[in-house]
Length: 187
Image (cartoon, rainbow, N blue to C red; front, side, top):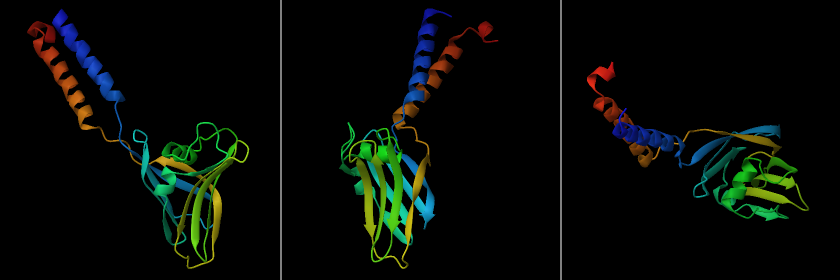
């Protein structure tokens, strides 16, 4: 392999490495609920760590759809742990259950005369509490719910146009290296 082919191969290898590591698309997560009383029918949010911001956050409980987007982007705090603020990263840390050590996580909901839904974490420090809260219209039935949750990624990120350009460049460079080999070396 001559020096020109080595350089082309190095560029192709570097391009493929960069392509494998670049991804900045928002991620959508599905919320799975467990607990007692009336469980939510659906929970879903989209979070973009590069911005950082929630672009949507919805929970359907007892016939009411709660839009928790603004609350997730600015969760309420009391006695926060170090590094927490009323910001989207703290909201995501609450949802991914990665706040300070010792935090206890749960959701709760109540219906009649008006409905509310909240994700909360407490403990882990003196008077520590983080909430994502939403209220809705009146529920048709008196109902309560309480429990825990887990999140799982619903969709994978889609490559950005620049990523696809890098991938195409890498493939073309590999093809150029193969084309430049003498016929006897090609096999």
